[in-house]
Length: 97
Image (cartoon, rainbow, N blue to C red; front, top):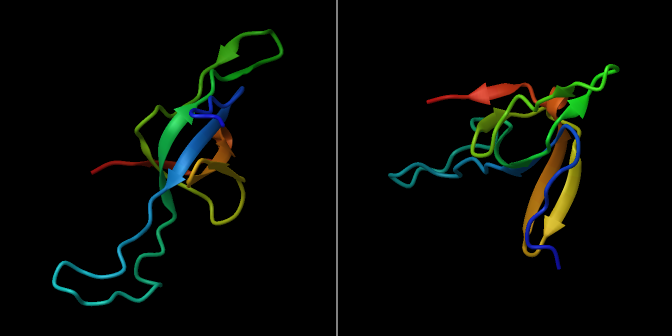
């Protein structure tokens, strides 16, 4: 069984961030409140190559929190955890505190 997956080319392995279902005081939140589709970058590939053979690096790095499209990606299961594999250009942006 694989312990670590290193994506190829410009692929990015992402672990989805599950939104909280209730507040610190115990109030249950409706599903629509926390609809932000985000994840944490677990691993990145080396990047793609252009026609001249130059390496185009991936725009995100491990540990980044990113905004994801509602649909797309490839489901990957490693051990008990589930991840999603996206292309670099499919990621909508990075989230900062």
